[in-house]
Structures are given as C-alpha cells and as structure tokens.
Image (tube, rainbow, N blue to C red; front, top):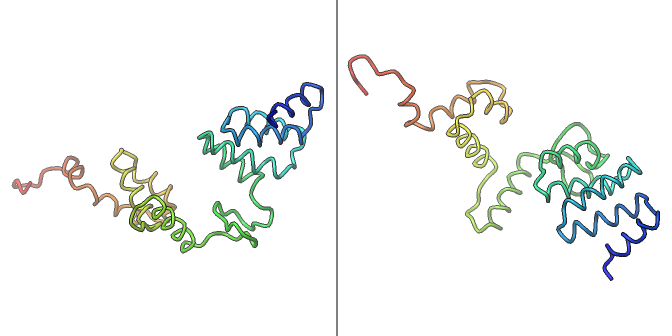
Length: 179
C-alpha cells in the first residue's frame, strides 16, 4: 500500500493536521501530481502558518507545476532562510545565507549551460540576450531598463543599437536619400 493511501485513510478518519497534510503534499509531489501536492500543502499551512518545511515544499510544488510567480512569492514570504539579511532574491544554499554575488550568479549560469551541453554562457550574456529578445518582441526600453535594474535610461539605450533592421524601419529617411 502506498504512503498516499495510508495518509488519505488517516485524513478520512478525521486526523486532519499539518503533519498528515505535509506528508500527503510531499508524497504527491514525488509522484509529480502537482495539483494535489499544492492542495495538501496549502491545507498544512492553514493548520500552521509557521511550518517552514511546508512553506519550502509548497514553493517547490508551485515551481514544479509551472506557477513560477506564485513560487517566488511563497519563497520570499515564508520559505527563504530566516538568516537572510536584506531583500536579496538569490542567496547561497549553505549558511550563512548571504546574497549571491554577481560572480556566484555567473558560476550558476555557466554550470547550467555546461549541463545543457552548451558552451559556457555567462550571466551577463544571459541578461543581454534576454534584453535583446524583449526588444525584438516589442517591449519598451523603459520596461527593459526596469527589468535589468538600470539606473539610467542611457544604459538601456545601448540595446536600441542591436537590431539595425528594426531601427531602419523606425528612422526617418535622411535628407538627400542616404538610405
């Protein structure tokens, strides 16, 4: 008999508590049944809002289900290690949970590119590619600058030079017909 069957029996018998719900959420997550995992983990958190392991697993289940925005919000609200100082989004896995440095982010991105069988890709290249693709998709430079957290619009303006074909469509003809 599967662990989910045993835990569901406990639940049906009236033993509805944070531990039973956490166990069900964990088991369903391992079985890749994300909707059920999320449902039981939400119930575990309704029983105990300070259940940090449930918050962490809940964020993991949301991410596995493709609900990335909700997963990040859950992580930032409750699942992030309490020792983190400030408001960094990315922190080191091992204590002390300090903010990842730009070099640390680059190491993660390079390692991921190698695992994917690609040549090493740096975090800077990833940011540049994301900004370029957003621009090609029609995103305004102001929004791209906000996403990249540029302090100046002039810093973001360098991306306007990337797509010369699109620039030619926007530019007015030069007097005398140079274009």
